[in-house]
Image (cartoon, rainbow, N blue to C red):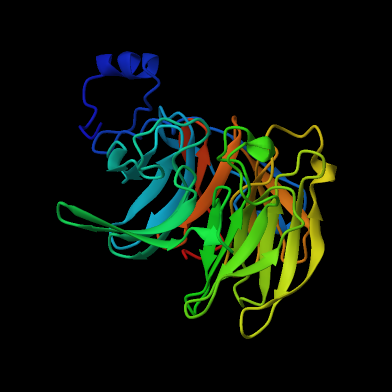
Length: 347
């Protein structure tokens, strides 16, 4: 409220409403901010350098069945994300409710099927040109929306004539090479699904020019994937219920992958909250913000657990937005946001 306080009888009313009164001519103070929708747990002093200890966690949108795949669209200043269960793609902008921007985002066949059908990851190439990892279609597509027309181009669907399980997450390097994971999480029967054609879960590279490469077939359920700022390291999350872990691979100049090494062992997180390793992003300093048990784990470039952004529901992923100044997080039913001191890598 911006009017001046002149009559003393208003003081009691404002006090009863929790509004602070001030001298005549001064502005009435704003209402206190809403309580944080989560909490910050610092495990090392470096955590406070990345996120101020009193920073609130905001819940900015809610009412979804299974929100996932957050991605910032700089051209439209909006957050894109998927509701994988309803097979829809949403966009959210500050001050407005989320709106559907694409129906049948991950499964375009009208024949009914079980399992997760929607999109599991989104990459923004340019204005209204997106790359989607589709669980239902079991492939990766480029979607181009031009006015009232939607063009779909299949980028990759098979490895050696066998259909993928359900492409889950992807990241693109500066050369335009695409790295992605392919666990069976979109299949109704998971590893035992009768429609499964590949007997393993893979990590792949699709070069901008060249043939698809299988980089690793030994992880149980590879999910999230991210590149270091130098693009010399590739990180992959393994949502293995028996051994949740994050792995690192050294990358060659041609994008080839070297030996895998255990980068962070999720066994140390036992009993610290629901959730398994999922989507992740890096900041400009090389720290990794990764969905995992309890919320978003903040890990240093060397694999030290610096702290956790705790969210009151299992989370699937995160993305930097607002010029890299805020981190957006997808819970199952809601979207969360937190301002950071560090700067994130949008792409």
